[in-house]
Structure formats: structure tokens, C-alpha cells
Image (cartoon, rainbow, N blue to C red; front, side):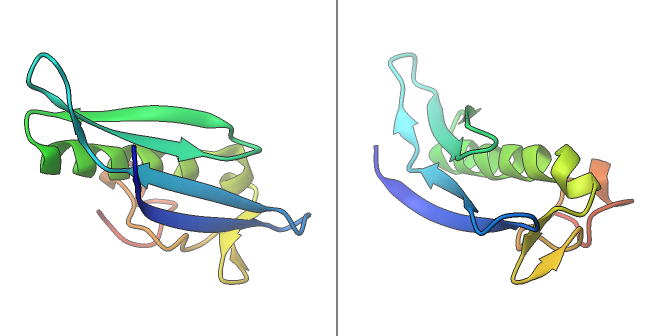
Length: 106
């Protein structure tokens, strides 16, 4: 798999960066597509985004990334940020479920 997109988040209480990577969609044996999202520590998780087309899988992966970071306790407590700002915009659109806490829609 090849990384096609990468984003770094900041932690307010650490110099550590949280790296999120999105991988190119791959065609599965059943004809569906999967695009993985890997988020580094402290999240340390991998999520598959799926679809019937490669674009659907990629879109699904980006939505999963949005859900994971905007629902994180660190974000809610203002400890997860981007570009020196914490608890606000993270440099990616939010799913409609988070519009009460996140800055702009997906």
C-alpha cells in the first residue's frame, strides 16, 4: 500500500506530533475497494474505509479520520490541535454529527 495523504496534529502538552496517513484504495477479491487510515500514537489505530468504487473508499476513509479525531477526548478537552490552535479547526472537514463542536462541514 502507498500513502496518498498525510496530516499531522499537535498535542498541547507535548512536542509529539500525531500523524494520520491515508492509503491508496485497493481492489479487494470481492470487487469492493478499501482505503486504510492509520493514526499514530496516542491513537494508534487503523481503520478501513470501504466502497464499491475507489473514490467511495477514499471518501469513506477521510470521513473515518474526521470522526476519530473530532470525537477524541483530547480534542474535546482542547488538547488536540493543528497549526498552533487547539480545540478548533484540525485542518479537515467535520462530519455533520460534529458541527456543534467542529468548525466546518464535510
